[in-house]
Length: 120
Length: 110
Image (tube, rainbow over all chains, first blue to last red; front, side):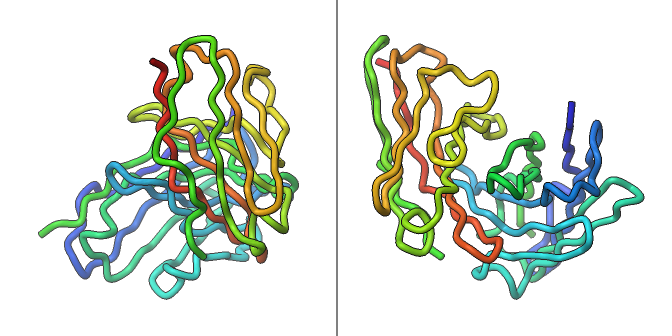
């Protein structure tokens, strides 16, 4: 059974860079049929797609966040990572990593989520 | 890209049906049959309930069904059960490997 697990700091200072890693287990991260992505949810609010990465390194970002987001992949470690720069309180959210199916354009496996708070 | 529009809330008694709408634009819902629906219980990760407008993943009860007309997709939950009380989000492919989610609907079982 495929599993995804987010990890990283739960508190980030304003103007600094948020860094999270998602570790994939129980399946291949080098699948040609899937992308790996990040989605966030501010407290009490809806879901927002941040971006996705293919195992080859091709990346796709939400236009509203593109200038601050970098997603990378390390297939040898079965991990992909998110960096979000110049954070503000508005970036406080639960961050989920998820697998995207290329064929169905759906998010079929999700991590449990990690709360990241931006505060001084 | 703007969030897809969903009603904030919907409700029904056990055994009844509830339908949630998800309105997008010609750039997303109106063009692509890649609309999916997710159920989220408090403190949990979203769970895929419907994909490609009307397909159910294995294990999802057939009480859940989806449809689409023009720029609006819909999720219907028939025979409401207590465990169906949750937040529901739609999502649509928006081209160029971009995705957009709906604003979310809280379903209450009365």
